[in-house]
Image (cartoon, rainbow, N blue to C red; front, side, top):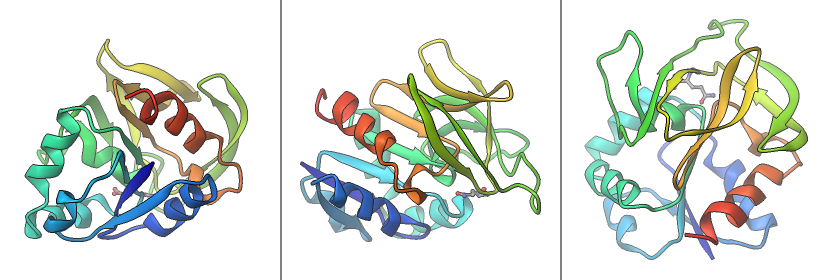
Length: 190
Ligand code: GLN
């Protein structure tokens, strides 16, 4: 199994370490020709969505990646990655890939005090460590989406088909159960 990481900006190296620890092969996507290689899933890491969206377009990777996800390539997005996937960014006319039928609000917990850590339930898996770092909030998702985690009445993880999106960072902890869920429930079944 080969897991590709969007490696333009952000914490892709942490995700890569998790998937390697789980026995997957990995591949970094840095330029448009990397998208022609063969891989089974793609990870959109946390970081800065405006920078990632700009680089995706400038490097000519945007349309191919969007099409691959739309056609069913399994994708796991964390934090900024969710903003890239979302169909709508509230109070912002920008739409990046737009494949996830959800609306998000950037930096919704506040810029300075917006980072916190909790343990929560994800897809029925209990006590999952969840780091939120200047995280967006998912304000709305369409009926076809399955809500996998919530915190204080807000959706923090959801799945729409082969797209898995979460506003926290599971890759920053030694607990790899979220990545295992992605591999077993989405990648291996796709
Ligand atoms: N605040 C960032 C953004 O808007 C996301 C932060 C993160 O990925 N940890 O893109």
